[in-house]
Length: 133
Length: 141
Image (tube, each protein chain N blue to C red):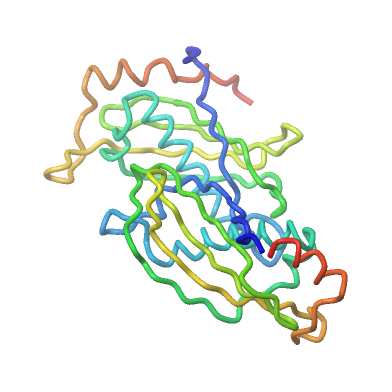
């Protein structure tokens, strides 16, 4: 089977993404990654999915720095695994010169927003998600 | 291309976490959007990086309409109202897709000496660079 494709989102850096060290603050990477994951979720499950998907786990390695002079970065996400009620994605932030500055893996859970509990993906959702594998 | 008397226009990507539980862009984020447009104004007028010698001394915002959190992008303009001795007063507007104004801000940004951190008068070159962005006088309401 072919490698799952990256879903990409270009992000323009903001002045206040930068911290006192002159680089993008580590916490801000999480919002960049969220933009790419949102795109992946919307691609597979439609815009309503963003109301139902919550993050259960996120691990991230910071590999290099992004600076304001980079002007923009690409956040990208690809689907690694589909569980019963959760998905695991690989997420990266890439500088314009192609350097991967951060690499993350995230577990995102499908939830019933009324019961506030996780729920299994429906067969239809599963079919759509599998298209991204 | 600079049209004298016209504000510069920026398109700003909306991020998921700009939205708040009311389903609209949070009020504090408007500051980020308008600051970005101001930065582009100063960079357009004085060259990239010039923004680094300015600090905001005052910002006032009128919130006129909600920006739905579903927006992917907003249009923001920034122009100059007045050039002072060591400061510049600017006007920003954030637009909804239908062309109506979602928020209007006025800001005072102060030029400073990067060594001492103190305010300093604008140079003649800076005045000349900013002059094309001075907006026409608004009629008294």
